[in-house]
Length: 190
Ligand SMILES: Cc1cc2nc3c(=O)[nH]c(=O)nc-3n(C[C@H](O)[C@H](O)[C@H](O)COP(=O)(O)O)c2cc1C
Image 1 (cartoon, rainbow, N blue to C red):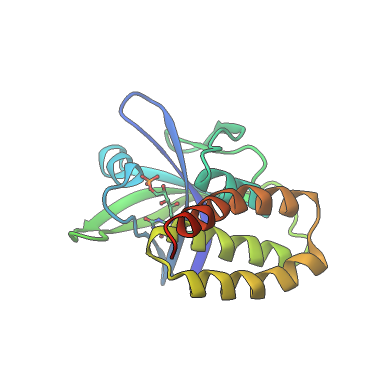
Image 2: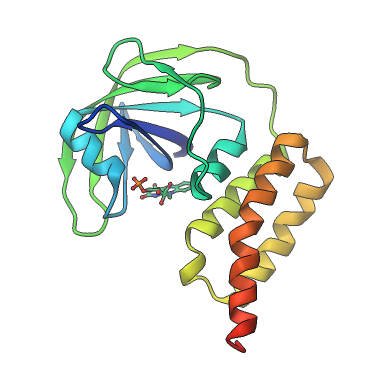
């Protein structure tokens, strides 16, 4: 199982770095798989810990991918780290070991603390659409134009039917890099 979540990690100068990541759940371990180069990777290998914030506010996912990384944070409880203030729940992790890899190392972590802050209010199709769109944006430079346009048309269906304010704002942010890529490919005559 893979949980799409927000990973926070501290750099050597104490700055908190926020990145959306798909964290793999394997037995009692949570595995973070950052693609190199990655500040998250550097931070976790140095500090030996990380925090996962579970949030239904998809603006955080869309925001991190579009340069909007300043989200309210509060201190973690058991480790040196920060979590999203508005997370529904969070998990504090200790790095157990790293399985190194030139492309995508595996950071094997164990949970040292879990806390719930708000209740889950149900699935929302627009949130799924925004998450999938965020994944497309994270691969924009490698994505064929036809694949982008067909996936976008599909994601728009659930989005249009069910989005609230937060999902609409997140969608708009993600459409900025997509529109700029469209303009570029049109300008290049592709
Ligand atoms: C839903 C979602 C899941 C993601 N999962 C991963 C992941 O597992 N590994 C990764 O390296 N990047 C992932 N990304 C992209 C990163 O968030 C983004 O590239 C980020 O800048 C990572 O690099 P950093 O550690 O230097 O911040 C994901 C993005 C989204 C929207």
